[in-house]
Image (tube, rainbow, N blue to C red):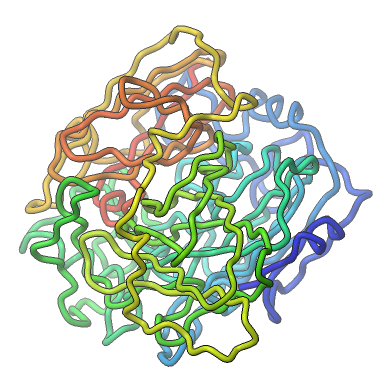
Length: 544
């Protein structure tokens, strides 16, 4: 993973990682912003999803007007190719699907106000899309199949073009089926042109749980293992050829071809428990856990000098694992969560749910130090190394367990937003209550006992302050993500930190406030990939 110095960041308008980075990655200061007309595939008509009338569709005038308000800075052009490949995890090669044959995918870096013009070339044997997780963008560029666009067929390209308005640490990933549990993800950093933090180096840290290609396992087959014998998906899964065809609620989007027979060993996790998650850690026993695509025996090594102030951008790209993260012999200062600044808070460890991001600062000591990501309620660990010596000391062992992992861990709900991003005290105009339902035994996840349907809407109106109460009626924890918006964690246990993804513990509730200021159709879903693909998704729609 590319680790730019602070001096490099200040010199360059954007940076990108890896020798085979992107098939094309250019910057232009003379281009125009997003066009005023509907966009989809280049030259194609606007996409209108199935559903009831009276709602703002992804490319409607209200969406275009909101995009124009974001402005139009320099155009930054990128190209990703999604294709089958063989990946080296550090001593272990596995077949998988990836962006530009790298794990993680290439770092995309722009400055707030830039226009991202990114083409995804689909060379997979299945349909795909690209979602910019956490980015407040125009609805028709959100990458949700059958809701904001048609999925991209094999051999086709799709052009995503939008203004990157807000600085922060984000994540790109496929939003089709179980593809995000492969290597179809990449870090996205939007730099602040008026960056208030002072630091010397930066380390992008991407965490992942991995099973694809290990002893024949695939995410789709593992999802089948989790379902009771003889059960069906209830018409809410992104289904592909050979998997039963399309359903009325969600047209076929082809997650992966199926051979019709089971492959790989059972990956069902039994007797899992996490004190921090108040119950079971998960349902899937991933055989590997990675930092920046590397196994603990061959870790990613970040080098700097003693005394350097280092910014870590920590991203959990895993599909079913929360990680407890700590850097041996160092205290971390949390500066951002999900891209938004918080009042600086010291901690020894962090609990990072799927698709959450945390920015922290550390002052590097002299020596060799393990950065450990412990999978909550699961076996194994992920490891990377920070070193400031000249290489005379050995790397930490793969099973190293720094004391900081068992130290103070500050939860997201206790983080206080920076004054610049704190929501005001406005009373909500609309209150919405959603029950999180389902069970591990039946694997029938959903909201209010209903599985996902692209045609159903939960209504809001532009300009409203919305209070969303998520009531977890299950024995499992869920990282909940709202597309196109950020929310403030409120209620008795929350102090207003701005986020787009937050953990709801078993039999607890989470109260979230957000402003309905981005018209369109937006998904709300659990970011446990195995839960969302079993029905735990719904749509917030803007009424006209």
